[in-house]
Amino acid sequence: MSETVHPHQQASSLWTSRMAFILAAAGSAVGLGNIWKFPYITGENGGGAFVLVYLACIFLIGVPVLIAEIMIGRRGGQSPVATMRTLTNTEGTSKGWRIIGWNGVVASFLVLSFYAVIGGWSLVYIGKAALGLFVGADAEAIGGQFNNLLANPWELLLWHTVFMAIVVFIVGRGIRSGLEKAVTMLMPMLFLLLIVMVFYAMSSGSFGRAVSFMFSPDFSRLTTEGVLIALGHAAFTLSIGIGVLMAYGSYLPQNINIAKTAMTIAVLDTSVALLAGLAIFPLVFANGLEAGAGPGLIFVTLPLAFGQMGGGIVFGALFFALLLVAAITSAISMLEPVVEWLEEHKGANRVKSALAGGFAAWFIGIGTVLSFNLWGDVHPLGFISFFEGKTVFDLLDFLVSNVMMPLGGLAIALFAGWAIRREGLAEDMGLKGGAFKAFMVILKFVTPAGIAIVFLYNLV
Ligand code: PHE
Image (tube, rainbow, N blue to C red; front, side, top):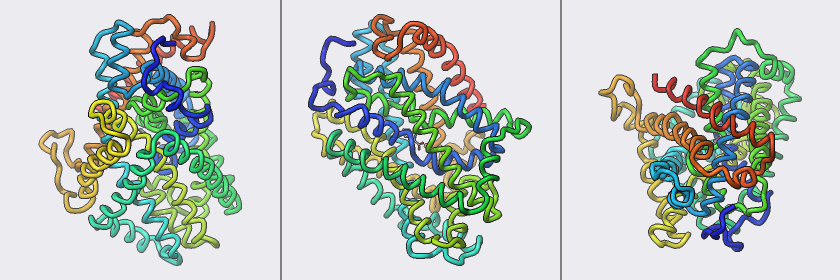
């Protein structure tokens, strides 16, 4: 443990309990990735075998980085940028590692810019479901509703703005009265809503088929690409590699066991993804929809199901409310590194920092809003064949999810595994004896190799 008390490590700014930190970190991890993305990539990649590989990636690659990142955050006790600056000095490592901090602040900020746009869709869909707009609509009409939304820049901009305003409001109130209050209310609500949805799905008739789709592995349906998608998604869904957990970790009290906490977070995150699958696939199968329908799975196929089922208005609105909650608790974590950085480096107070950071991310988000309509044919890097046909949104998503997150995760694993002093490390991570030794082997070799493979694959 470090001897100096860093700014965030003062008693008054720490999370009030282990539970509060777990809910906040799990709130960050559980997001659109779990409820929107996991089901559709599972559907596209054939189910059971993909899920099995995904689970292995979570525990062999995700959890080690999670532990390392939180530990680094607590040791430094400041914004990711200042934490890395301090640690490269106190640990006597190369200054080059400071790139981890910068990468985090920039990447989390960029991811927020487009995440808020998609988060806005869930606001729209709560309204559509509650107003009964799906009732009796056929596939074409529902697909049309989704396309109309994407085609309307003003509507997208409006909901992007509302979503961002909610995020800024929560973050501006600070760790204890903002983030902590929000997550301790929202996360249990999310679990509850999800369980209600799974129960509903159980009674829908195709639950058995969904369970066997998700849990009986058929390896003939798994491709190499599927393995790599599973690996990439494991990093995204745990929010690792982009400073978010480092920022949250900076407020973590010293007496909390990081290894145990990280494990709990990973288990919660994974449970939500699996529950989301169990809530969605029975509806998909019961309504004769296509499991491999792609990114439109929940926005195009589920409303169809909600429109046909009894109680569809309530369950539909409930489902999209759940998506909103998940998206908000993730989005607030994305704003945190930027806010900490603004507070430290610009001396602004928390409210001003949240407003400034949120405004800038909102502004960049306009590029994503326009990517679905007016700028649909604008391909900024289109002259490079690799980026052909990619919109501003596609480029941002690619840059963050496929470049900055994996490289950040890789750097964190290497920094914690090879660069920093071993002394006190086992204690800091909350591991002892053999478990620590085994863990270090994974962190030094298995995790970096795994990430390096996905990264190279994504580039080719
Ligand atoms: N983990 C979040 C999700 O699954 C996304 C996220 C990425 C959150 C990066 C914070 C940082 O949706």
